[in-house]
Image (cartoon, rainbow, N blue to C red; front, side, top):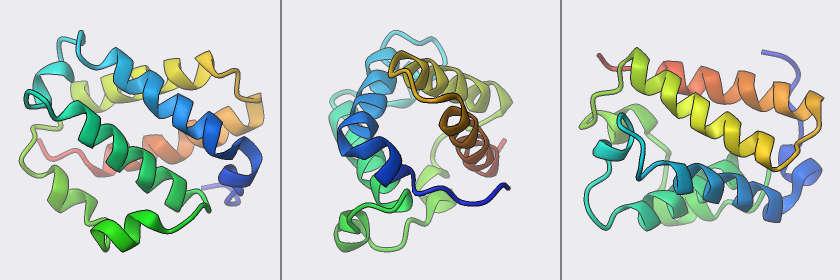
Length: 124
């Protein structure tokens, strides 16, 4: 991976929040990801991802305070995360990033970083 960028400082909490909101706005109608979220769980999932990414990108450590160690593989184990789910997650996330008109160098960094996590979470 390239050198870590201070994404929280570069984009700010408002833009990161908008990216996550844009992603979750796309999820309910998606034929792959939409079925993975139990009824009424989207708001909680959005909050957790927003909190995690803000923490991971250099913002306040609220995620650690509220949830402890991320344990991403364990938390995603109940869901069938195959190549199609991984790719769709990235497609929807990158569409949301593009919607926020993130600078090309920051977009490339986010694509590499998030793509690595998405691949790491594959369990099928």
